[in-house]
Each structure stands twice: as structure tokens, then as C-alpha cells.
Image 1 (cartoon, rainbow, N blue to C red):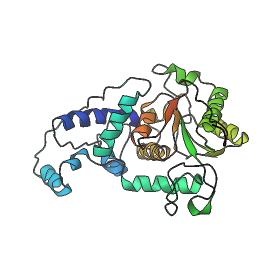
Image 2: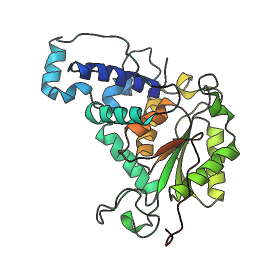
Image 3: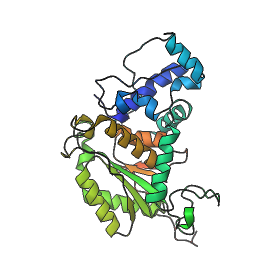
Image 4: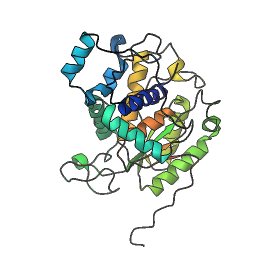
Length: 297
């Protein structure tokens, strides 16, 4: 059993191998044993991501191949070579290129994420009328006449990471807030999108960041009531809702200016779906330099 981030990285491993041999790949995530499920037990991959095979075949050719049983089944996927913690630049570049070519989020999911950002994160999206780049400034008029404001995403993975990434659980709330404020100053951001699998910590972080004068936004995913049990292992929660929430939050975070995160494959997904200049850092990276005040060299 694996979370959606681990499943996706494993899928990228198989995509990479098939691409090397120029073999079309159709991914089917509808097995009843998976922790994440598609709508009405359909194929999770089809619902949220483009099929890798469509990079080589037309939709009609792919349908005919499946109908004629002109396929070779393979169960299980090799995980793309990556450290258990951290995301080296070379890996981020490779993962982003693989996703752009073979495994991009469905347009409908991205459209919903943009609608959320436009409604809940004022100024986070560029104005089509003015041609402003994403997160260009922190003042002036933005989309819909609202004040433009850079937003960065903060993802804090906790619950079952005690063995794999004990440093995730060792982070205190005070340290998370301190680093969030520091990152805001260094990246000239005025807002933070907060995501976490620990609902108690998330609620407390949103309150603390708001008290420091920052704009705060968050989605309300279904989470395990026990903060020590990871959501994807809680079978009392709706399997499709968990899938939708995870993919939706990944899409939202990829639209932000950058990412501050703990160690997790889900955070890696955010970087894969982001633009090439998207900055990302963990809570254990070297401190960022604060920008010089306006008018100073």
C-alpha cells in the first residue's frame, strides 16, 4: 500500500523505462487493493492524469489496441530512482519533463485549481489582460481588479513519517511558522497556502500565520481524525474523495510562486507539475537571503 505520491513516482519510473524503448504505456489504477480509487471504482490515472500512451498514439489507435487485446500486461512498477528524502535539482528537472510529455494533470483539474486560487488567494494568478507573469509583484492591481500578491505553498507531511522521515515529526509549530515568515520575506510573498495531513497542526498554523499579518488559504480535505494515522491508510475514509483531495491540492500548490515543504513524494509531485523556474525548499535547507529594500542595490 502506498500514498498517491509514492504511486505516482512509481508510475514515472515505468514511464521513463517505456519512453527509453519508445513503447506506448497505458496505466490502469483500478485494482481493488489500491488505497486510492477512481470515481465509481474507475481508473484513477484516467481521471486525473493524461495517459502516457497518448504521446505516441491517437485516442482512436489506443482504443483499438485495447479492444483488440493488442497489449502486454505488466503488474507492478519500478520506482523512478530518487532519494527517500529531498529532491535534487536533476531529479526535479527529469520528473518535470516526464510529466510535461507523458503525465500532465487533466485540464479540468487544473481549471478547478485556478478557480480556487482566483477565489481564495486574491492576486495569486496573473492577469490575462495585463500580461503579468505569475507572482510578479506584491502590489498594484491584479486579476479582477484585486491587489496582486505572491502566494507560496507550504506542505507539512506528518502522521506515519516517523520511520521514513523522523525530522518531519520533530519540527515544532514555532519553527514551521518562523520559516514560513522568513520564506515570505525572502520570496516577497504576502500569502501562504497551507496543506498538511495533520488537521490540528494545520488549523493552528493558519491561525498563527494570520496573526503575523499574512494572508492564509487552505482547502478542506478529508483527513484521518487521528493525527498519528496517515489518511491514505485510513480505510474508513472515502477512497475516491482522498484521491481527489490529494490531486487537487497538488494542482493548487503547483500554481503558487514556490514551495516550502517537509520530505514527501506528494511534495515532489507539486514540483513536477510546476513551471521550470518554480523555487522550492525544505525546512532543513540553508536559510534564504532576505531581499534588499526597494531602491537599494
